[in-house]
Length: 117
Image (tube, rainbow, N blue to C red):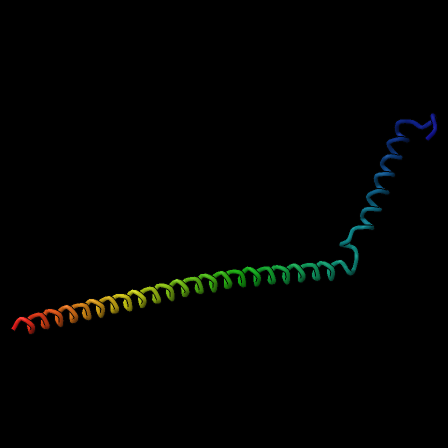
């Protein structure tokens, strides 16, 4: 650019530079590339597969949590059943003990009565 350039020359140069920049940008535009659609489809397919894998992982986590909860509840039920069985056995032993003590007492009472006669 020399000092002799007029304002109109500068405007014209600016317009040419802008046009050249636009042309360069258009030439680099990926939509003009013949493989662009194929790449876009491949990216979309990869995204769909990724989402599908993530959904499968989420479902697997949910199923694992459900199994863990079911196991925990089964263990609780088993514990409750064992405790109930132990309580029944303890009660049965206590009843047997009381019955044997009563029988022993009755035998002593009967022996005392027999001695007095």
